[in-house]
Length: 454
Ligand SMILES: [Zn+2]
View 1 (tube, protein in one colour):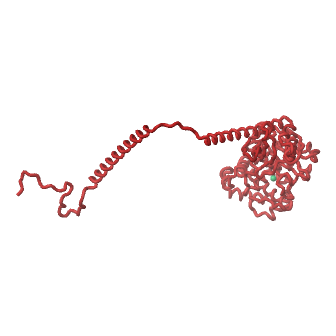
View 2: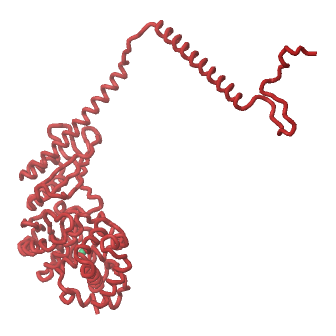
């Protein structure tokens, strides 16, 4: 028997016999208790670890303190290497300054008209460099160069006392012009005497563009208020007449500049020797001139620039310069040839009606014959006949005329700028600038071209 005052027999505290009908229970501790036990174990372990760590650190500190102390002495090899690196860095910085000072001196000589100093930076035996510098000095001075700002971009040792350096030059013909032209010069310098640095190699890099005519040919020039006319001596007899027409053309072209007007237009007159060599070298037979908006310049084939054709040719090419706002070759005119050339011809036509358009007959026959009805007229092939080439220009001109007539001058210019300068797709530019879908623009202007050229 059991004593009634004695406590009941011990049982596992968390365990109770399942009541009949209860679902079977798992034997062992409850999950809450297990969690509490685990947490307790973890905390204890952490405390132990932290304590052990502190003890070890204190022991380590004691051992370190007991060690004798030593002063740090740089090895002679390391000191020598460090001194060598510093000397090299100092020399590199100094050489950069020497080249920069030389280029600044050369710039001052150019702007001050000191040819001997400008050319004198070429090494005495370096004839090609002397020729390049003499030619450039003569041409740029004749054209009234007003800014020549070199910036040394990089310089590295080549061998011995020779260093190579890349120099970016920005220049223009009006002091403080908004959009200077640029040219990159690759140079080699002999710096045996750093007080007299001398170029031993010089060549210009234009990033795929043609070398500017002033660097290729000794030019003469005549400078007007908005235009500079320049060309080889053989064309100098025409400078006066060309300048008079070009000044008039500049007034017209300026009216189509949407953002900035060019500081000064440069009109290069290419003689028989220069045409095909100055520019890209592969102009079609039908080409009479071309524009380089990025340099605010145009090149005219002197033999094509007859007195009767000259005014229109100037307005067309200078129209490219003003409307393309210096973008030039940076923009890929994927399907905007018609827009770029149509706009230039629109400037050239001075908004006269199609009845007075110079290439009216060939335009009509092109529209009736070869034209596929697409407003996006493609460029003529290099070997195209003058009739085919002029027919395409005329159709493009009618396309741009339609834009102005249907949507207004301001909207049409905005559309042009968005596509040809900014590079927006036709569909985006049509909606944003003209307020209608491109399909509407296309069908409206295609129909108008067919009605006009009948
Ligand atoms: Zn053109």
